[in-house]
Image 1 (cartoon, rainbow, N blue to C red):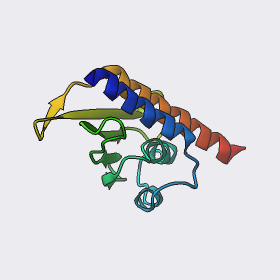
Image 2: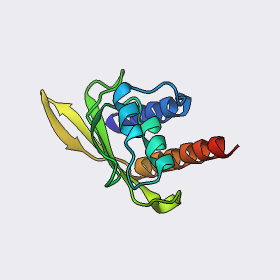
Image 3: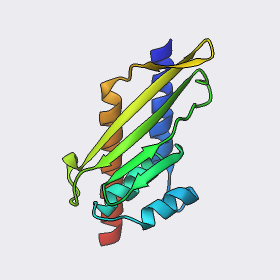
Length: 141
């Protein structure tokens, strides 16, 4: 059951990311996006867009790090997820972004670490790359 609930939460995260427009972002994401340092700006913006429904805990635009805070999703209140995005290159490349996803489940009022399907991080990396390509094409076209 827990794997099913997490899969639903991850799918909701991906679905919401796909529905986001560049104008519908949180204020903290907008500020972070304006302060991009030495990382690829399309990957940076795409990362903020893809995870727009997670709260931003901290950002390092020079080092290419975005840390998101814990969030539970409706229908899965007994578990929560968070993510960290590493932007590794100034170029828009498939190996220029890495996502780490963390999951916890609430057992008897205490949050305990739980496993995450490794495919989840890869799917989120692909969603970021797709969004980054869209942003780049929109700027060029």
